[in-house]
Amino acid sequence: MTAGSTHWFWYASPQTFYPLAGSIARWCGIAAALLAAAGLWVGFFVAPTDAQQGEAYRIIFIHVPAAWMSMFIYLVMAFWAALGLAFNTRLSGMMATALAPTGALFTFIALWTGSLWGKPTWGTYWVWDARLTSELILLFLYLGFMALQAAIDDPRRADRAGAVLAIVGVVNIPIIYFSVQWWNTLHQGASVSLKSAPTMAASMFTGMILMALAFWMYSVAVALVRVRCIIRERGE
Amino acid sequence: MSEFLAMGGYAWYVWGSYGVTFALLAMEVVLLRNRSKRHETPS
Image (tube, one colour):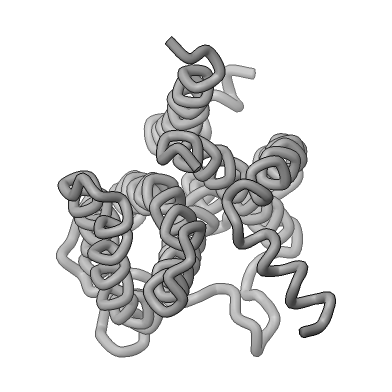
């Protein structure tokens, strides 16, 4: 066994992870505040007014990062859930449980801001479109995961039951992501991809990335604070 | 300043988005802080 693997198993124990989670959470919280301040400044004072949408497009700086986080947190949650199911490690299930409320929150924010963006641009707050509907299903998956875990008293059994639901629900993530390609939807396709240059002004793109990093740091911070609460509540 | 707040006529949509987002994030932080504090002072 190498020193590296020993190190990782060392932190897989809740007792040793607890103080580490506290210091990472503190630094991520500070980073989130600074990145959000920079992102909002670029988003409101540097990025120009959009030629077609006027000022309404400024919703993009929270809508797109929140939608990314809603999908990404689900993947991370399902990863921890699967790890817990496969190796029966206590901390994995706690990580999945700690991520769910924040994931649900970002899913709601993506839907809410999308709705407020849809009204001035599409003329409606809501439409049963493939992208919107699959994102709504994501919210129900998060809420279902939380309700299922809350309904089971034994935490180890709650972790296993939740893990099965989380893993089955992963199928929804590619559906959300590719919905704008697979179906004719009102929702526009991706403006940003790994393969091509973003189809937007550089300052708009910068603001969006700064806000995405801020939400990312925020999510790490709150998930780690929550996992510390869970570790204590389970009496580890 | 009032021009900035008006958001070119899209004030409700833009501030409605930002307001709800930051209110919800602040709420999560406050709830978590309370949850953490409950453990530090065991009854």
